[in-house]
Image (tube, rainbow, N blue to C red; front, side):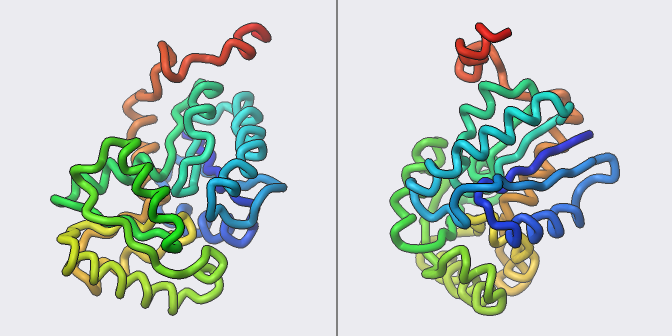
Length: 236
């Protein structure tokens, strides 16, 4: 099967990191393409950044229509453009935030989301409500680091993840840790070993879910919510 992973920011370094991590776990039958827009923000750390990345993401999604992909994954823990991408795509489209929250809810009584900074906490809580995960989410906790800082200093990032996740377990009752940024790809195993908690790497988990759903022949319904936009219907 062919799967396209889109990193919605324009960081070549993060895209290459994501590609390395996902190629280690992809199925033998999976042909994986990991890419990012040429323009747009280098990191997505605000609603403004999400809006600025949208044109580049949709351009890649529309180009994928003629490339016979079986699935498209939006690898940003905000799922920018997810509904629009599902409208214009004939193949399965998954966002790592929505997918990993649902998986996290199945893995324990409550999960905590680790996000970048305290300013992103309200946004993540809003997304928890959007995906109807209020009953499963114990907390959203900030790491106090930017995306660039996580990329630049892996040891500090891992230490901070361990500290914040440990406090979420003790103080919030979290049993599952959700790493709320594609830039944290590759940290899950070490954190899980040291804390004894289930740790969800959203990009990795979403890739495996995508492979399973493609094998099962399941994709989004085109009947209502994700039906083809009228402007594209007229072109057809």
